[in-house]
Amino acid sequence: MGDFIAKADEFEKKAEKKLGGWGFFSSKHEDAAELFDKAANSYKLAKSWDKAGATYVKLANCHLKTDSKHEAATAYVDAAHCYKKTSVNEAISCLEQGVNLLCDIGRLNMAARYYKEIAELYESEQNIQKAIEFYERAADFFQNEEVTTSANQCKQKVAQFAAQIEQYPKSIEIYEEIARHSLNNNLLKYGVKGHLLNAGICQLCRGDPVAITNALERYEDLDPTFSGTRECRFLADIAASVDEEDVAKFTDVVKEFDSMTPLDSWKTTLLLRVKEKLKAKELEEDDLT
Image (cartoon, rainbow, N blue to C red):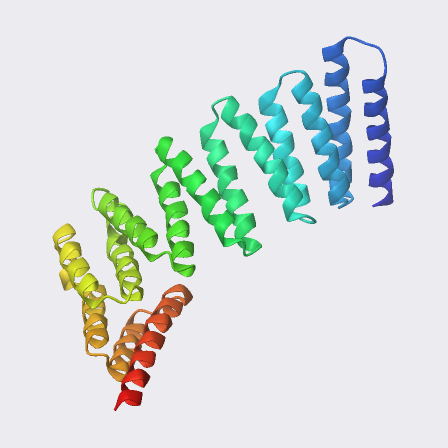
Protein backbone atom coordinates (compact mmCIF):
# COMPACT_ATOMS: atom_id res chain seq x y z
CA MET A 1 0.00 0.00 0.00
CA GLY A 2 2.83 2.36 0.93
CA ASP A 3 4.33 1.99 -2.55
CA PHE A 4 1.07 3.01 -4.18
CA ILE A 5 0.75 6.06 -1.90
CA ALA A 6 4.34 7.13 -2.67
CA LYS A 7 3.70 6.72 -6.41
CA ALA A 8 0.42 8.65 -6.19
CA ASP A 9 2.05 11.50 -4.24
CA GLU A 10 4.81 11.68 -6.85
CA PHE A 11 2.34 11.85 -9.77
CA GLU A 12 0.29 14.49 -7.96
CA LYS A 13 3.38 16.65 -7.27
CA LYS A 14 4.38 16.47 -10.93
CA ALA A 15 0.85 17.42 -12.00
CA GLU A 16 0.80 20.45 -9.66
CA LYS A 17 4.24 21.47 -10.98
CA LYS A 18 2.95 21.29 -14.57
CA LEU A 19 0.03 23.56 -13.69
CA GLY A 20 2.29 26.06 -11.93
CA GLY A 21 4.93 26.15 -14.68
CA TRP A 22 5.17 27.83 -18.06
CA GLY A 23 3.79 26.32 -21.22
CA PHE A 24 0.87 26.52 -23.59
CA PHE A 25 -2.38 26.79 -21.63
CA SER A 26 -4.13 23.73 -23.09
CA SER A 27 -1.08 21.46 -23.27
CA LYS A 28 -0.06 22.05 -19.65
CA HIS A 29 -3.60 21.21 -18.49
CA GLU A 30 -3.63 18.11 -20.69
CA ASP A 31 -0.25 16.99 -19.30
CA ALA A 32 -1.40 17.67 -15.73
CA ALA A 33 -4.64 15.75 -16.38
CA GLU A 34 -2.68 12.69 -17.42
CA LEU A 35 -0.63 12.84 -14.23
CA PHE A 36 -3.68 13.44 -11.98
CA ASP A 37 -5.34 10.41 -13.59
CA LYS A 38 -2.32 8.25 -12.74
CA ALA A 39 -2.21 9.68 -9.20
CA ALA A 40 -5.92 8.98 -8.65
CA ASN A 41 -5.52 5.40 -9.87
CA SER A 42 -2.61 4.82 -7.50
CA TYR A 43 -4.58 6.27 -4.56
CA LYS A 44 -7.41 3.89 -5.48
CA LEU A 45 -5.03 0.92 -5.48
CA ALA A 46 -3.90 2.01 -2.01
CA LYS A 47 -7.59 2.25 -0.97
CA SER A 48 -6.94 5.87 0.00
CA TRP A 49 -10.46 6.85 -1.06
CA ASP A 50 -10.55 10.48 0.08
CA LYS A 51 -7.26 11.25 -1.67
CA ALA A 52 -8.42 9.44 -4.80
CA GLY A 53 -11.70 11.41 -4.79
CA ALA A 54 -9.94 14.75 -4.30
CA THR A 55 -7.49 13.93 -7.12
CA TYR A 56 -10.29 13.03 -9.51
CA VAL A 57 -11.83 16.45 -8.74
CA LYS A 58 -8.50 18.06 -9.72
CA LEU A 59 -8.56 15.97 -12.90
CA ALA A 60 -12.10 17.21 -13.62
CA ASN A 61 -10.92 20.82 -13.20
CA CYS A 62 -8.11 20.25 -15.72
CA HIS A 63 -10.61 18.89 -18.25
CA LEU A 64 -12.89 21.88 -17.65
CA LYS A 65 -10.00 24.23 -18.43
CA THR A 66 -9.71 22.62 -21.87
CA ASP A 67 -13.51 22.53 -22.30
CA SER A 68 -13.57 18.71 -22.30
CA LYS A 69 -16.94 18.44 -20.56
CA HIS A 70 -17.49 14.73 -21.12
CA GLU A 71 -14.08 13.86 -19.65
CA ALA A 72 -14.72 16.25 -16.74
CA ALA A 73 -18.09 14.60 -16.06
CA THR A 74 -16.42 11.17 -16.09
CA ALA A 75 -13.80 12.39 -13.60
CA TYR A 76 -16.51 13.75 -11.26
CA VAL A 77 -18.31 10.40 -11.40
CA ASP A 78 -15.03 8.58 -10.65
CA ALA A 79 -14.52 10.95 -7.72
CA ALA A 80 -18.05 10.20 -6.48
CA HIS A 81 -17.44 6.46 -6.60
CA CYS A 82 -14.34 6.90 -4.42
CA TYR A 83 -16.13 9.23 -1.98
CA LYS A 84 -18.98 6.70 -1.67
CA LYS A 85 -16.64 4.72 0.60
CA THR A 86 -16.11 7.62 3.00
CA SER A 87 -18.56 10.50 2.54
CA VAL A 88 -22.05 10.28 1.03
CA ASN A 89 -22.32 14.10 0.90
CA GLU A 90 -19.10 14.44 -1.13
CA ALA A 91 -20.24 11.63 -3.43
CA ILE A 92 -23.57 13.36 -4.06
CA SER A 93 -21.88 16.71 -4.68
CA CYS A 94 -19.52 15.18 -7.30
CA LEU A 95 -22.35 13.27 -9.01
CA GLU A 96 -24.42 16.47 -9.23
CA GLN A 97 -21.52 18.31 -10.87
CA GLY A 98 -21.08 15.41 -13.29
CA VAL A 99 -24.81 15.40 -14.13
CA ASN A 100 -24.82 19.17 -14.80
CA LEU A 101 -22.03 18.71 -17.36
CA LEU A 102 -23.76 15.73 -18.98
CA CYS A 103 -26.93 17.82 -19.33
CA ASP A 104 -24.88 20.58 -20.99
CA ILE A 105 -23.66 18.17 -23.68
CA GLY A 106 -27.00 16.39 -24.11
CA ARG A 107 -26.02 13.03 -22.56
CA LEU A 108 -29.41 12.71 -20.86
CA ASN A 109 -29.46 8.92 -20.58
CA MET A 110 -26.23 9.01 -18.56
CA ALA A 111 -27.53 11.97 -16.54
CA ALA A 112 -30.63 9.91 -15.68
CA ARG A 113 -28.47 7.02 -14.45
CA TYR A 114 -26.53 9.31 -12.13
CA TYR A 115 -29.68 11.06 -10.86
CA LYS A 116 -30.88 7.55 -9.92
CA GLU A 117 -27.55 6.92 -8.19
CA ILE A 118 -27.94 10.16 -6.20
CA ALA A 119 -31.46 9.06 -5.22
CA GLU A 120 -30.09 5.70 -4.03
CA LEU A 121 -27.47 7.48 -1.90
CA TYR A 122 -30.16 9.64 -0.27
CA GLU A 123 -32.22 6.49 0.24
CA SER A 124 -29.27 4.83 2.00
CA GLU A 125 -29.15 7.86 4.31
CA GLN A 126 -32.92 7.59 4.97
CA ASN A 127 -33.42 11.07 3.49
CA ILE A 128 -36.79 10.21 1.96
CA GLN A 129 -37.73 13.68 0.66
CA LYS A 130 -34.45 14.04 -1.23
CA ALA A 131 -34.66 10.45 -2.50
CA ILE A 132 -38.13 11.22 -3.90
CA GLU A 133 -36.84 14.41 -5.56
CA PHE A 134 -33.99 12.64 -7.37
CA TYR A 135 -35.96 9.53 -8.32
CA GLU A 136 -38.49 11.92 -9.91
CA ARG A 137 -35.73 13.67 -11.86
CA ALA A 138 -34.30 10.33 -12.99
CA ALA A 139 -37.77 9.14 -14.05
CA ASP A 140 -38.34 12.31 -16.12
CA PHE A 141 -35.00 11.94 -17.89
CA PHE A 142 -35.49 8.21 -18.56
CA GLN A 143 -38.99 8.96 -19.85
CA ASN A 144 -37.66 11.63 -22.22
CA GLU A 145 -35.12 9.13 -23.53
CA GLU A 146 -37.88 6.48 -23.84
CA VAL A 147 -36.15 4.11 -21.42
CA THR A 148 -39.52 2.98 -20.08
CA THR A 149 -38.43 0.17 -17.74
CA SER A 150 -35.94 2.38 -15.88
CA ALA A 151 -38.45 5.25 -15.77
CA ASN A 152 -41.03 2.91 -14.22
CA GLN A 153 -38.54 1.60 -11.66
CA CYS A 154 -37.82 5.15 -10.51
CA LYS A 155 -41.53 6.07 -10.45
CA GLN A 156 -42.26 3.01 -8.33
CA LYS A 157 -39.62 4.18 -5.86
CA VAL A 158 -41.33 7.59 -5.71
CA ALA A 159 -44.70 5.92 -5.13
CA GLN A 160 -43.24 3.64 -2.46
CA PHE A 161 -41.68 6.52 -0.52
CA ALA A 162 -44.68 8.83 -0.99
CA ALA A 163 -46.90 6.20 0.67
CA GLN A 164 -44.31 5.77 3.43
CA ILE A 165 -44.71 9.46 4.33
CA GLU A 166 -48.49 9.22 3.91
CA GLN A 167 -48.73 11.05 0.58
CA TYR A 168 -51.24 8.46 -0.60
CA PRO A 169 -52.86 10.39 -3.51
CA LYS A 170 -49.42 10.84 -5.12
CA SER A 171 -48.71 7.12 -4.73
CA ILE A 172 -52.07 6.08 -6.15
CA GLU A 173 -51.65 8.34 -9.17
CA ILE A 174 -48.24 6.85 -9.99
CA TYR A 175 -49.27 3.21 -9.58
CA GLU A 176 -52.40 3.74 -11.68
CA GLU A 177 -50.42 5.54 -14.39
CA ILE A 178 -47.81 2.75 -14.57
CA ALA A 179 -50.59 0.14 -14.74
CA ARG A 180 -52.29 2.01 -17.60
CA HIS A 181 -49.10 2.29 -19.64
CA SER A 182 -48.05 -1.30 -18.89
CA LEU A 183 -51.27 -2.70 -20.39
CA ASN A 184 -50.08 -1.77 -23.89
CA ASN A 185 -46.72 -3.48 -23.50
CA ASN A 186 -46.49 -7.29 -23.72
CA LEU A 187 -43.36 -7.36 -21.54
CA LEU A 188 -44.88 -5.18 -18.79
CA LYS A 189 -48.48 -6.46 -18.89
CA TYR A 190 -47.82 -9.20 -16.32
CA GLY A 191 -47.06 -6.53 -13.66
CA VAL A 192 -50.37 -4.67 -13.96
CA LYS A 193 -52.19 -6.57 -11.18
CA GLY A 194 -49.28 -5.81 -8.81
CA HIS A 195 -49.44 -2.08 -9.56
CA LEU A 196 -53.21 -2.04 -9.06
CA LEU A 197 -52.82 -3.96 -5.80
CA ASN A 198 -50.35 -1.32 -4.55
CA ALA A 199 -52.70 1.48 -5.62
CA GLY A 200 -55.59 -0.29 -3.86
CA ILE A 201 -53.63 -0.68 -0.60
CA CYS A 202 -52.85 3.06 -0.71
CA GLN A 203 -56.59 3.70 -1.26
CA LEU A 204 -57.31 1.66 1.90
CA CYS A 205 -54.82 3.78 3.86
CA ARG A 206 -56.91 6.85 3.09
CA GLY A 207 -59.65 5.31 5.21
CA ASP A 208 -62.54 5.70 2.77
CA PRO A 209 -64.29 2.37 1.94
CA VAL A 210 -66.35 4.07 -0.80
CA ALA A 211 -63.15 5.27 -2.51
CA ILE A 212 -61.71 1.74 -2.60
CA THR A 213 -64.97 0.34 -4.02
CA ASN A 214 -64.98 3.01 -6.74
CA ALA A 215 -61.28 2.34 -7.40
CA LEU A 216 -61.90 -1.39 -7.85
CA GLU A 217 -64.61 -0.66 -10.41
CA ARG A 218 -62.17 1.60 -12.30
CA TYR A 219 -59.44 -1.04 -12.16
CA GLU A 220 -61.79 -3.68 -13.57
CA ASP A 221 -62.71 -1.30 -16.41
CA LEU A 222 -59.04 -0.56 -17.02
CA ASP A 223 -58.06 -4.25 -17.12
CA PRO A 224 -60.96 -6.68 -17.61
CA THR A 225 -58.75 -9.58 -16.45
CA PHE A 226 -58.19 -7.93 -13.05
CA SER A 227 -61.57 -8.98 -11.61
CA GLY A 228 -60.52 -12.66 -11.80
CA THR A 229 -57.25 -12.16 -9.91
CA ARG A 230 -56.40 -13.01 -6.31
CA GLU A 231 -55.27 -9.38 -5.91
CA CYS A 232 -58.71 -8.04 -6.82
CA ARG A 233 -60.51 -10.47 -4.47
CA PHE A 234 -58.06 -9.56 -1.70
CA LEU A 235 -58.76 -5.82 -2.07
CA ALA A 236 -62.53 -6.42 -2.21
CA ASP A 237 -62.44 -8.61 0.95
CA ILE A 238 -60.22 -6.15 2.79
CA ALA A 239 -62.51 -3.26 1.81
CA ALA A 240 -65.51 -5.24 3.12
CA SER A 241 -63.78 -5.91 6.46
CA VAL A 242 -62.93 -2.19 6.76
CA ASP A 243 -66.50 -1.24 5.89
CA GLU A 244 -67.81 -3.68 8.53
CA GLU A 245 -65.11 -2.50 10.99
CA ASP A 246 -64.21 -6.17 11.57
CA VAL A 247 -60.61 -6.51 12.77
CA ALA A 248 -60.74 -10.33 12.99
CA LYS A 249 -61.99 -10.64 9.40
CA PHE A 250 -59.32 -8.15 8.24
CA THR A 251 -56.60 -10.26 9.92
CA ASP A 252 -57.91 -13.50 8.38
CA VAL A 253 -58.06 -12.00 4.87
CA VAL A 254 -54.46 -10.72 5.13
CA LYS A 255 -53.21 -14.06 6.54
CA GLU A 256 -54.87 -16.06 3.77
CA PHE A 257 -53.47 -13.85 1.00
CA ASP A 258 -50.00 -13.83 2.58
CA SER A 259 -49.95 -17.65 2.72
CA MET A 260 -50.46 -17.79 -1.07
CA THR A 261 -48.62 -14.62 -2.16
CA PRO A 262 -46.17 -13.45 0.53
CA LEU A 263 -46.54 -9.74 1.31
CA ASP A 264 -43.40 -7.61 1.23
CA SER A 265 -42.50 -5.30 4.13
CA TRP A 266 -43.91 -2.20 2.37
CA LYS A 267 -47.38 -3.76 1.93
CA THR A 268 -47.26 -5.19 5.46
CA THR A 269 -46.46 -1.76 6.92
CA LEU A 270 -49.35 -0.09 5.08
CA LEU A 271 -51.82 -2.84 5.96
CA LEU A 272 -50.78 -2.56 9.62
CA ARG A 273 -51.66 1.16 9.44
CA VAL A 274 -55.12 0.24 8.17
CA LYS A 275 -55.50 -2.38 10.93
CA GLU A 276 -54.43 0.11 13.63
CA LYS A 277 -57.11 2.56 12.44
CA LEU A 278 -59.69 -0.24 12.55
CA LYS A 279 -58.63 -1.20 16.07
CA ALA A 280 -58.85 2.43 17.19
CA LYS A 281 -62.41 2.65 15.82
CA GLU A 282 -63.35 -0.58 17.60
CA LEU A 283 -62.01 0.77 20.90
CA GLU A 284 -63.90 4.04 20.42
CA GLU A 285 -67.14 2.12 19.95
CA ASP A 286 -66.44 -0.08 22.98
CA ASP A 287 -65.96 3.05 25.07
CA LEU A 288 -69.27 4.43 23.87
CA THR A 289 -71.24 1.30 24.75
